[in-house]
Amino acid sequence: MKPIVFISYAGESLEEAKWIHWYLHDILHWNVHNYTVSSSRYPGSAPDALESELHTSDLFIQILKTKLGASAAWTSDVPILRWEFENFQNNHPNETSRYLLLNFQNGDDATKKYISDVSSFVNPKTPACLQEMLADVMNFSTQQQSRYGELVGGFLDFKSEMELLDIRKALAKNRLAKSDVIMDQKHLYASPYAAQLWIDLTTSNKMSPLKIVYDRYPFDNDIGRMPKVALEAKKSIDKWINEFKSGVAPLELNVIVLGGGDGIRKLKTCKWLHKECDVASINALLVDISPDLLAVAAERFKNSQVTGTNTSFAIIDIEQRPKAIREVRQRMMPPGPGLFMFLGPTLCNVTGASFLEDLQKHSMESGDLMFCEVLLCDTPTVQQGKNAGDDSRFDFITNPLLTLSIVPERKCFFEEMTVDSSGNLQSHVWYYKTGADRYNLATVMAAHRTHWQEAFKDAGFDVLDIQEHEYKVQNKKIKFGYVIAKKP
Image 1 (cartoon, rainbow, N blue to C red):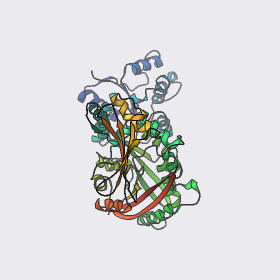
Image 2 (image 1 turned 45 degrees about the horizontal axis):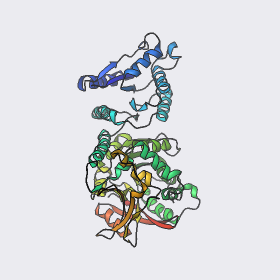
Image 3 (image 1 turned 60 degrees about the vertical axis):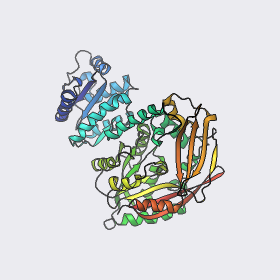
Image 4 (image 1 turned 180 degrees about the horizontal axis):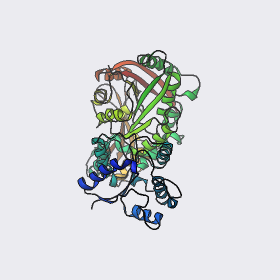
C-alpha cells in the first residue's frame, strides 16, 4: 500500500513544491492528497479540516523557503505554516517522527524563529517504517542539488539511514546463529532505549567509570588550571592553526565531530578551542549512527554561544560510508580548515583494519587535523573470563539482546582480557546463553603508544603529537592517549 502524504507550502516555495510533488506522485506513485496553496485550503472549520488531513496522512511535509505564508482570521492572524505546525504540535505531540520540514534557504526573522521553534520540538529521528520513505525524498533532494540550508526532522545522509535498518536485520539473523556470535559495536546504539542508557552512564550514574572520565576531562575550561596534557596539545594545535591565519585575524574553524554521542565532551573541547587557541567561531558538523544521541548532541550544540546556529548534523555510519562525511561537509559547511574530533575512545571499538586509511583518504581534505582519543596500555595482562554482573554498563551493553528476544541476566555476563599477536590488550564482554551459544557484545582495544603512532602513520597521517593522560577511576588507573595527526 502506497503511503499517503500531506504537503504544505507557502507561495514562495511553489517551484520546490512542484518538483517534490512530481517526484512523490509521478515517480514513486505515492498518494499526495493535499496540494493547495491558498489560505482557503481548509473549508468549514479550519482546525477540523486540518486534523482530518493529519489523521489520514502517513507523512506531513512542510516546504519552506522565505516566508511562512499568509495569515487570516481563522488562523488567529498567525502565518498559515506556523498555524499548521502548532496544531500538529498540540494534537500529535508524540508523532513528530512523521513530520518533515524541508527548508531551502534563510528567510525573514519570523521564518528563522519558526525553524528554531521546530528544531526544539522535532528530533532528527524517524521510526523504521518511515525511514525508507524519507530516504527516497532526501535522495531526490540531493540529486537536484537543492540549496537547503537546514533540514529538520529528517536525515542528511539517506544511505547511512538505510544502513541503520541493516543493523536490525543483522540482529535478526543472529537469532538463528550458533556458537559464538560477534556483535558489531554499532548495535549498541541502535535504539532510543540504548541512547538513554548511554546518557545515564555518562551523566547520572555515579558508579559509572564513564561519568568519572567525563567529569575529569582535561580539555575543559571549567576545571581551573590547565592540565599538562592540554598545555602540550595546545602547542601542536596552535602551530597548525597558525598555518591558516591571515595576519592577526582570528580563525573561523570547521569542527567535524565523529561519533558525537551525547556531545558533552565534544562541546567542552569546542569551547576550549575557542578560548585557548584563539578560534573566533566554530562551525560544527555532528556525525553519529544513533539518531537519538544525535538529537541530544545537536540541541546541546545549538544552545551554545560558541557553536550556536552554526551547527549541522548527519546520520552516517562512518565505517561503511566515510565518503559521506566529505559530501555532507561540502554541503553544510563553508570552505576552510577542518579539525576532526574523534573521542570515545570510539577508535578502539572499530573493527575494520583499513578504517583510519579510509577516513584519511575519503573523509578529510589536505591540511585537516585529527584530534583522536585512544586507550593506552603499557603492560597487557591476560585475564580469564569472570562474571561481571555488577558492571555499571550491564544494561547498556546487553540491550541489543532484547532485539533477539533474550532477557539479559547478570549471571550470564562475563568479561575477559586477551593479548593479540601484536601485544595489544583486548577486553571482551561475553553473554553466555543457555547451551553452547555465547554473544560477544563489546570489544575494546588498548595498545602501547608506539602502536597508535604506527597505526596513524601507516594510514597516511603525519603524527604531530601523542599526549598521555591518566584517569583515576575507583581503584583503577586508566591511561588515555590524545593523538594529534594531520593529513598531508
